[in-house]
View (tube, rainbow, N blue to C red):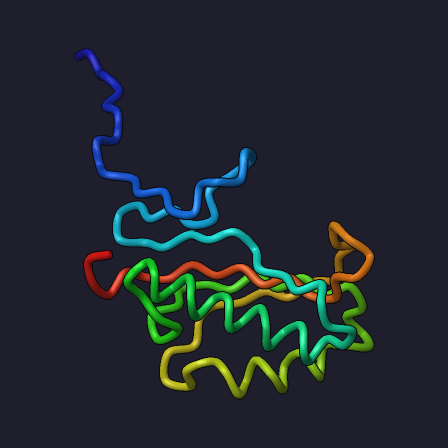
Length: 129
């Protein structure tokens, strides 16, 4: 019996592709994948988190989804011991309480010294984009 590999023929949509390193949004098999969102313009984790979540709302809308269709969330905090409670208070106000994603949150040395938080989510597509 001979087994052959099949190449996945499903459509991949890439949005916001001006960055030479990556696409900001990739939609594949009804799942929205996005790059991590940051904000280096505010000095505290609550303000940075709010901006990150606003960016996520915009990206999800562009991709035909919303926070009600989140599947997973990945969160990186620069100072987890100091900022975890504050981050969670902003997150809890934003997340759909009826449709919470699986989530992880870790401490990390982020790409720039001004960054205190980075958030990345995946979500199901709700409508054609």
